[in-house]
Length: 445
Ligand SMILES: *Cc1c(COP(=O)(O)O)cnc(C)c1O
Image 1: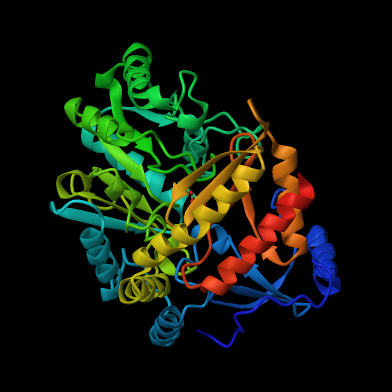
Image 2 (image 1 turned 30 degrees about the vertical axis):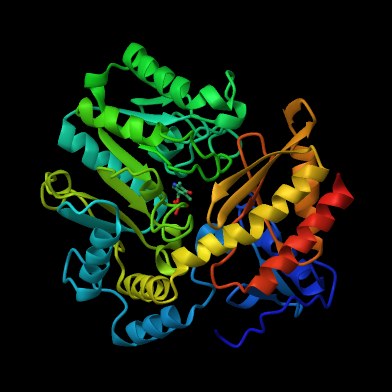
């Protein structure tokens, strides 16, 4: 695994002087609209360690937002990308195609849920994949409306901003947004008004009633759902909710789109989170973990749906770029050969008991949720007071950063602390990261 020692090492304060100098240049050169969560400038990375310009070695609990699932600079990714970049860098698949694109499409058709006939189209980003899934769904159904959920995150382009639920920072003053997007309540057991036990049944009933009353089933082209929500707070819907929604879609001629941009590619202990829900989506969007860090995204789905679009209706200059495809093939090969789905389950087994022990001590941990290596704790004010505690979340995050642990928060209320370690990180690194998190928690609470 590259030449990066798999050890945490702090040589300066975090961020160090060289990072601070670069951050000053950043302020002068880069739009203030692009912010940095932890302004340490990375020089090298491998496995579960990031090496910064000051020589610090940080433990990575974020994977660049669920991207470097196979580890940073994973050997098979590096190997294939290096070979590909020497062969050719671009032709545009829509002009003169190449085999690597087909191999990725075949792999996605094979790995995504369901053994029906499938087709894939490749793009550059998760947002672009979601946009294209909606385009395909509208084209196939001849309907306009799209239903998304509270706490959803689907990207930053105009249509995907409309699908995304949270105003700050994603939507604020960026409107007007794309039309014909409707929102339904999310099945959110921890905050369900009737309590978690009734959430499964009630959340589906409310969804059905609301779509019926406010949109009308016959107007709906697609329902877009993250089977575990990402940026919105790692919300795991009540058991059965995803399956009921998918079945309801099928009964009403509506396409069910699973946005697995964050939850896909072994992250949750299965290739895709839909599998755990026993759901076969009509269309599934992928990105993030697909290509070990190179920009690549896909829409995979029913052949009749995907083939309904006229030639030239889908594509893009860079979509399915050969280098990104080579990276994806290296990443997928790594996931298979190293059984990274199994590894994600081990990560869950390592994390959850420790998070539970912490929750016993601190009533500010209101909920522990997620699956595999997509885990989170939701922080609240205290016993019996479920008010979101964003201040504590931010303080713990900062304290982790200061100790050389790269952590991320999320959630509509900014009070969810999430864990997305690379699946290449050793147990030792993960345990050390958890030690840091526990200390940071104790010091901040
Ligand atoms: C990150 C994310 C997106 C957007 O992906 P980009 O590559 O940032 O455009 C869409 N959906 C989900 C679920 C995501 O987590």
